[in-house]
Length: 167
Image (cartoon, rainbow, N blue to C red):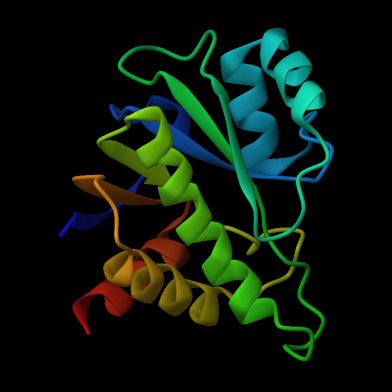
């Protein structure tokens, strides 16, 4: 069973084998976490992502990490659901993002993975519900990943993830 921990910080500075990108379906970059990862990884990430697009909500694909500092070797791109009030299987799609990202991590041999809070930015998923889905899903995942780090950019997200992990 993987060790799960919550930290606050910049996901592009995590010392892990792979970081997960909360991407859009084009995999060409955007705002928020997606933009930060693309900026840190350099322009080749956009080219590699575009070659794999489209990526559908709930799915995940991997690219090299390009200019991200070692030990990061892979960026795992996943597309979260846009919140529509919880009536369009958003919880199931979000859970799939975490599961599929861990499956992809297994396929590339990553033993440590950092996740952002998927879909809680412009996609509008309620952060408290997203934290519970993230923790429950990674805890239940059948994976060879040894360390799963949930990275919060801000204090409210950190508090929600920490509370979810404590239960």
